[in-house]
Image (tube, rainbow, N blue to C red; front, top):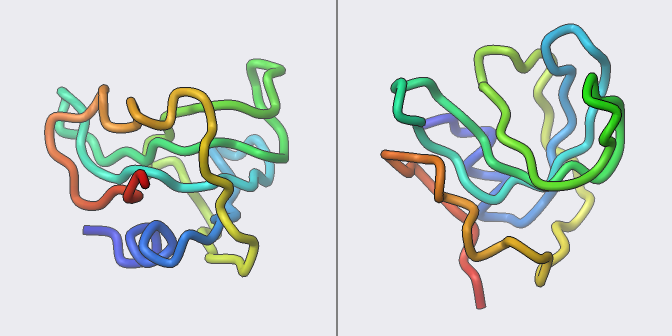
Length: 101
């Protein structure tokens, strides 16, 4: 379990990190676990920052091994985003996830 990610999920605060050397991102973490290839992943909603795809915001899956300078922020996570109910759809093992009310 990744303590920084799971603490942010539990506290409902955003994470900031550099992803794959591509630049800083601000992401609302929703689910942390492992994909079918047993790689550690974070599913979250990117609210700001760069993206190689050119899509700067939206639901994304991040490989934890590609994150650098991971830091919790005090920015609250929004709730009620479209697709929120499916945050663990791509994971075979879930360590922690946001509670959907």
